Length: 277
Image 1 (tube, helix red, strand yellow):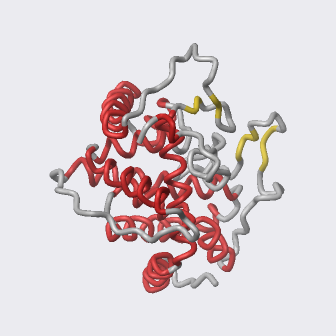
Image 2 (cartoon, helix red, strand yellow):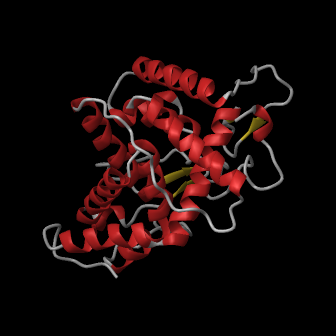
């Protein structure tokens, strides 16, 4: 992959609206507030906001349908394996279900971030306890109407990610794909910002070398910005595009999402006995 791949008219190399950087919420997993600060200067939105989730159990199923493709994409890119990713997603949604009386009142994007942060924290702990594994070929569905060139590019990026340590993957994806600053990543994971900076530097250096990318100078007149002001360096553009492509592929295929949903449903009696529809 070269820098010429960063902006192309075929849909790869553009800033997709499917996966955009998060607004910074005023809540984290375990918090008591369901408000999200609007970066557009309109203040704080709570339950009355147009995207506010409903706290009734039936709304959980709708929340899962709206967010699960993105969550499975994130988990797959972090874990590097389908089974680990599906298990991690199911566990995170079950945790949300256990606390749905509270989380269901959050703004939907804040609720989605709650699930993601829960998932990310658990994988951070798992990654710290186990030895690094040899990565096999990651089998993922193909996005409808994807060209062979796009599919090959996504396959190459997904093959490059396992070259990183698992904690490096967590940090580089949180920063480049989801637009989170180092301090916020550190706070979510319960570690020092300096450690996040080290992982981010190491991950960026490895991926840019594997993909043949060079980050533009901060003085460059050609640099772009994502919504929210995140510097759009070539690595961030490529990773965001792969995330968007893979999410659309999971959504179109549906099999993995249904498999995860069945796991959640089967575990719900132990999580409180309520079954969202």
